[in-house]
Length: 109
Image 1 (cartoon, rainbow, N blue to C red):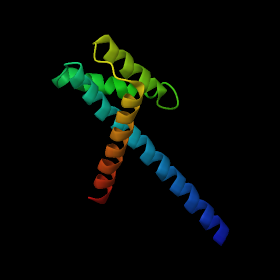
Image 2: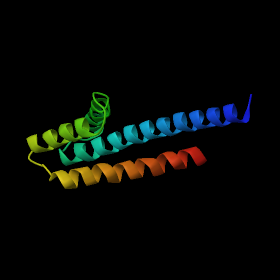
Image 3: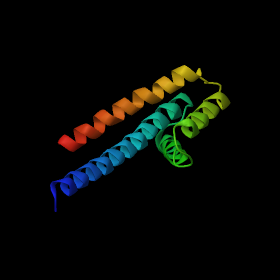
């Protein structure tokens, strides 16, 4: 193998790793967000866990965060606990940052 081939393989491996880490972080974010929304809606225990799983599954329907945003915005509004879009999207970003920290901590342990 040439040096170029080695570099190409290294970049492909790095890209695959980064994509996997982003997927894991988004799934973790959705779980954390789902648990937070569940608490806002008065759910706890198994019901809260089931709701969090439904948020994780919702994110698999389309590319991007809009599917998750629409679900949680509608669910919160239905329970009379709606939030402005910028606040809700800010929470999504906060939980994504938290998820990345958690995953990085797991990787270093």
